[in-house]
Amino acid sequence: GESVGLHLPTLSVQEGDNSIINCAYSNSASDYFIWYKQESGKGPQFIIDIRSNMDKRQGQRVTVLLNKTVKHLSLQIAATQPGDSAVYFCAENKSAGGTSYGKLTFGQGTILTVHP
Amino acid sequence: EAQVTQNPRYLITVTGKKLTVTCSQNMNHEYMSWYRQDPGLGLRQIYYSMNVEVTDKGDVPEGYKVSRKEKRNFPLILESPSPNQTSLYFCASSLGGNSPLHFGNGTRLTVT
Image (cartoon, rainbow over the protein chains, first blue to last red):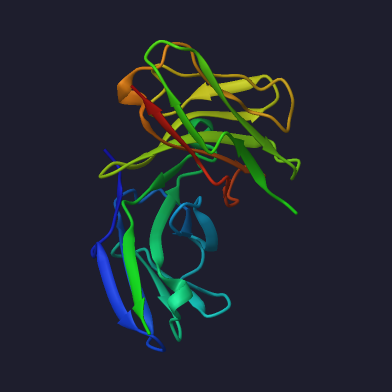
């Protein structure tokens, strides 16, 4: 079936470095993508989203890149801080068709560890 | 503060004893959903609701019920819990369509 996956299950970086978390998706009909951050004991927290008519979107210290040709999504975190340590999930949504309305498919997650 | 509130945060129960996990959102969102999160399986959707009195099955609905009598509330009901329903449960809401889901902080359920 269609799925969202991640290349790297863990990523360790030094404080101040830039982090890149990758995600491959298989549903070419997906038109909306989200990155979430999940800290221990908490629910997933929205970071940034991107629609399929864009290839790049920037937020505060984060950038999401979308490459539809190879069905690849990445999250870049600039000047990574210890507080960024968490599990990061990508998610995709195929909005065409009523049954997929708001139904996100989540990847397994990447554990990001930031060392001081 | 805009939030999704789940209760309880932790629950230990025995097989067959009916339980309800409550979920409430204060953002006037039409769309609400329940997920369970299990190691190695990620987040899987149980049920969702597009509006009051409109609910539908997600990917893993067996053993669960939901209701949506009011816009803000979306309780998850386990009529006869079993050990394979031991999991971390999340309620979420959104405006619907291509808009982000906002999650609660989770309910850790253990069924013995």
